[in-house]
Amino acid sequence: MKFNMQRPLPIAAATVLFATMANHALADQTVKIGHVAPLTGQIAHLGKDNENGARLAVEEINKKGLVIGGQKITLVLDTQDDAADPRTATQVAQNLVDDHVVAIVGHLNSGTSIPASKIYSDAGIVQISPSATNPVLTQQGFKTTYRLVATDAQQGPALANYAAKNLGVKSVAIVDDATAYGQGLANEFEKSVKALGLTVVSHDATNDKAVDFRAILTKIKGENPDAIMYGGMDATGGPFAKQAKQLGLRAKMLAGDGLCTENLTDLAGAATDNVICSQAGLALEKMPAGKAFQQKYEARFHQPILIYAPFTYEAVYIIVDAMKRADSTDPAKILAKMPSTDYTGVLGETTFDSKGDLKHGVISLYNYKAGKKTLLDVVNM
Image 1 (cartoon, rainbow, N blue to C red):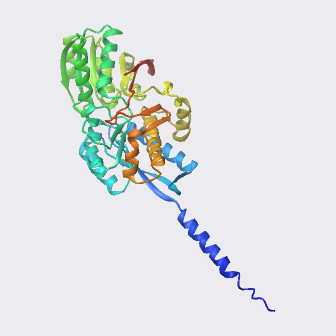
Image 2 (tube, rainbow, N blue to C red):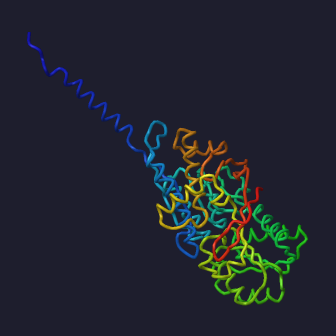
Image 3 (cartoon, helix red, strand yellow):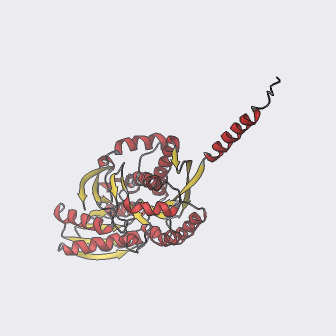
């Protein structure tokens, strides 16, 4: 009897075909997460810090391996520059929608986050801002909008209370940079100090491109307030503080998180020793995994964390957590899981209220000692 030794071949061929099909089915699916911040302009250093945090998270997740719906996922950070400009922000927001990102980490500023939020809402894509503090962002009724920091409605009172109770301030001059962030924070601070019985001697506006503040400061010197509150970013707040010291103003300078950075010493020089500022989130040294994050960040980027990199890092992980719970990379299914977020990471536990704000906001207060940013107090809101 003659055996046909060729008969097993179809089985082998089928096995190869099946393996090829299986490998094809398990091939990487590329999933884009958008990130937006100012990468050019006066506050590009803050934007790059935010981008670095998000990039570190994406790199870590890819290294560990991510499987959603039985398919291996490779994350790609689709990063865009809004130059801290509201009009540019809406353009890059539409670019990200057109790029089919599944979620957005950004924007950095309130003035860019607010106009961009409608575009993300219309597209049904989750937006998590790591640093926008103007209350309006989450008061628009959009189901897509979230943030990982406390709001100016909490930051303003925290600054005002500290000034009144710890510094003994009785009178204050207020200056803002006329942006959604700076003006919003200044207005919340003004409401709070008036409620505490303090005198607001003046409220002036400059702009976020200004470099010379001597006219405003000379007027304020004549008003002789106990403190000056500046609503704006470090790029303008640093020179503002420096020029106040040069003009011999005795007043303490109060400011929010836009100014409260590690870069302030380079911008304000010795005037930092007169600054007290707030950050709308937990201090790095108080974060449960803050030290470990700091070591990873500095090893990867060879520079110190400026302020909100831990928050962008966490935002990426929160998006991926929603993706895992949905077992899908569909933006609509990711969005559906966001309200039930209960994620524990670098920042501690993150849960959101019905508007997309943190259920438990925290304000950290700092001063500068010999140019070094130093934690003063943590206020739970």
